[in-house]
Length: 230
Ligand SMILES: Nc1ncnc2c1ncn2[C@@H]1O[C@H](COP(=O)(O)OP(=O)(O)OP(=O)(O)O)[C@@H](O)[C@H]1O
Ligand SMILES: [Mg+2]
Image 1 (tube, helix red, strand yellow):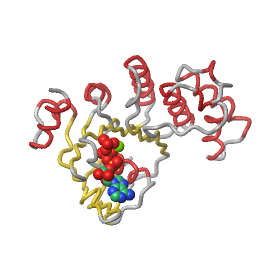
Image 2 (cartoon, helix red, strand yellow):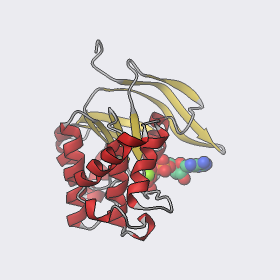
Image 3 (cartoon, protein in one colour):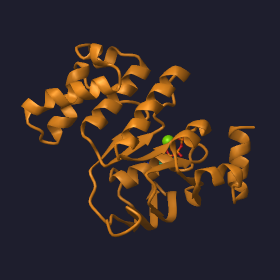
């Protein structure tokens, strides 16, 4: 790799239904683990979707210095009406992985998230936390170079959250770049190296994680930190 960043946003805009959702976002992402933080409605999910190519910017551009394989895990896991194994397998099938390799990869991914015994269960009958882990397995099975996670532990109990954090940490340790949103500031500190702080659709800060929590530069970030962790 010749550049130190792997994604650059240049004056990125997103307007929908007359609402400016992302305004003139200009930044370079080079960290291996990035947390996007900000209050409800700040534009975090929209920014993730723009980065993942699920939304088309209405202005500006995204520049990828190198092509990367990516996948995304949504806040509410999307489960097919099928078994857990079939759900993990489906992502692989979409990528054109031959059937013979898929089963092995899918089972390995379920082991990774600690759910091999649920392989034959109907996915939609699983608890929220279990579904979240299946969604992570589905993403992990693809061995993406870059994984977008939108509030991966928002509805999970503390034990499940820790488990999901452990899985994310393992993915990062095997070289997967992580870009995630979270309202759990402890989690951002534990996982991220860098924080992108959004407020009202604007990128107000991009800072190493410890510095963000110790010395937020903007009054908006200071207020946010006080509200979230008084
Ligand atoms: N299609 C749309 N048309 C109009 N407004 C939209 C549209 N999509 C999103 N918005 C608005 O854009 C803003 C940003 O939404 P987004 O979901 O990105 O926020 P968020 O930071 O992820 O919030 P949360 O913390 O609640 O998940 C919100 O005010 C939302 O209502
Ligand atoms: Mg969101």
